[in-house]
Image (cartoon, rainbow, N blue to C red; front, side, top):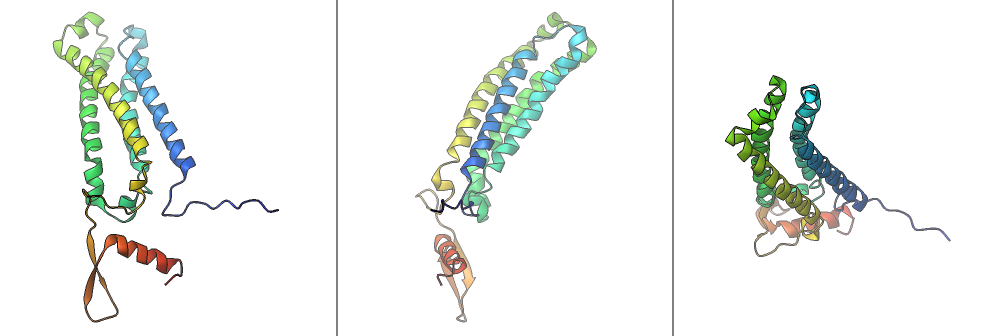
Length: 205
């Protein structure tokens, strides 16, 4: 008795193994970001300035990697496959805005720390500046909120509504004009147009 043949996911589906692997990588990046933020402000010995620069600069690079990895989770979504960029922006503008906010706060907290490490400044001189204290507190609070929120949004992309053309009351199906065999144009909702195209592709029409 022959075993079941594995059918690879098509362009209209998403591989659960690849999706879960990306989520695991995102979780590892979040953990690395937490470790770097924990050690960045604890190394003040002049001989450790290289490690200080690494722990301060690496979180900035990790933020960019997390954002890029988040967008790779969207490759198989319905909105991206059919070019609904305006609807996609409506779903993701909060992610972009929050990411830019956290990136700016991280720069405000880490750039003075890197400059202090290069100049051989002391712990007392650095924390004597009230702006450094505010940036430190804001960076820690926003980092915790951002990382947990980004993970939640990433796991939410597994929702079926991102992979099937199921329109809710807040998402109206756009109308496209297609040329018919008759000498006039007819308007079809995008959902009907997609279903018609899939049936033609599968040889049902």
